[in-house]
Image (cartoon, rainbow, N blue to C red; front, side, top):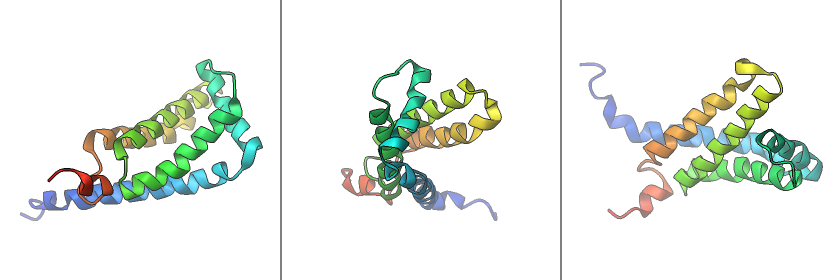
Length: 138
C-alpha cells in the first residue's frame, strides 16, 4: 500500500509544524517587540475589547513578547504546551479585536486558523524532536 506507512513520519510532521509556525511568529513578533512603547500601546489597546482598558503598553509588550519569544520556544520545542496556551490566548484577543472592529470572519480567519494550530499543539504536544521531548522521562 502506498499510503499505508505514513505514521512513521508523525514526529517529523510535528517538528515541521512547530518550526514553521514558530518561525512565522518570530517574524511577526519582531517588529512588535522592537517597535517600542508607541507600538506596544497600539497593540495593547486591543485589550479594551475584553474590558481591560488599563496599562495598554504593558499588554502590548506582553503580546509582542509572547509572539516573538513564544515563537522561538515553539520552534525549539521548549515549554511547548504553556507557550501554545499563551499564543492561543493572543489569538483569542486578535479574533475579538477583528470582530469588534467590524472585520468579520474574513478579517479574523487568520487568527482563528493559527489559534486552532496552537490548540492542537497543546493536545498533541511537542513531539520527540524537541527539547521538551528530550527532557521527558524515558
